Length: 145
Image 1 (cartoon, rainbow, N blue to C red):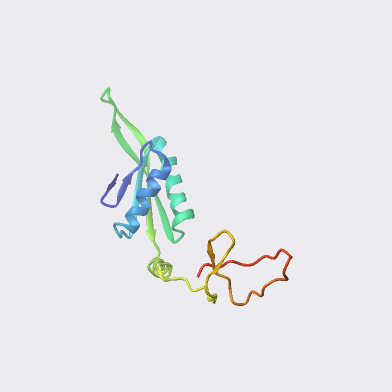
Image 2 (cartoon, rainbow, N blue to C red):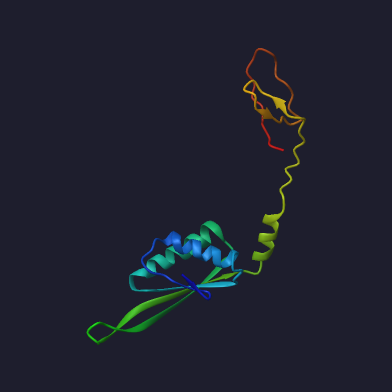
């Protein structure tokens, strides 16, 4: 579905094309991906580009080119078909965002050794939690360390 850096959009669901866009950027390490669609597939291309940009990669910068393709029909006559190319480019800050996302998160929560709950599962309780009064229900904040 991905030829070079071009994705030809057809009648598949938009999320299929979103997956191909994301694999092009992450697996193939491309700097830009071009979605090309004609006729009624234009809306699927726009949907795929917007889903990829809004949900998964907000650092993408889109640019749109509208063209008219000449297609020869089955009867041999030429007809004009609207086509659109959506180019999605990574902004310059994309590399830094991915590098920051790969770093481990340090929440800064200090935990005691695991305590055993009545159900037999181990739980870590933050050091700054004080035990509640006995005989009353209490809420504790459980942190995974």
